[in-house]
Length: 268
Image (cartoon, rainbow, N blue to C red; front, side):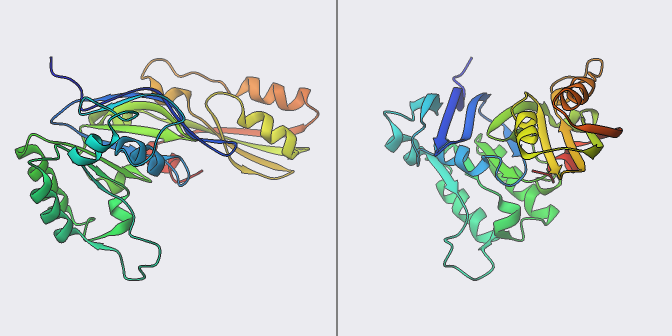
């Protein structure tokens, strides 16, 4: 079996008090296309900078094309093609997709891994279905690997073999593209009183809990555990309600519903 194009174990990058990338463990094989989706601030850009050898991790393991990002970052940079956001001082509407495709084709013989940060946001013409098919064809014909990011699945089109979900720096799951519509999270809306900042902070520290909206009288929470499996649905909302009540909040109403990947990743 050939060596993975990307291998990481507990890859972490800490910025100030925040884990921008939090113990990410992943494997990506050659000749595949992987999409990483997540809300703004999830850590997608930081992860790509680490994998491109343009930023050192705080701790953890990462090998890209067999090169160690700690000790062989120059080789990583030489053998990957990374396209991030245009410089902040560029006020023109970003990069032209056709020009970027030409640059990828020119680089492919020496760079079998392409890393594209939010091309749907930064490239004019990326959203065109025909262009994305031409990008896919270019990558697959070269036997290369492509990793691209986006806020939602719809930004990536249908070219991905797998889709990963990044949330608060953590890679929650990697889903075969064919299973995207079979996975879901649970959104819980809670009305009442006493949802203080300290209580919200306590909720945020619990595994698989993302607080999307928080006021003194209303909470909207995404529960993410069910994303990882197609097994019987796990109802982990009851312990949270208990925690709220025991912490002094007055819970009046609780509503639960499923949300798919597209709706979920539109929230922080």
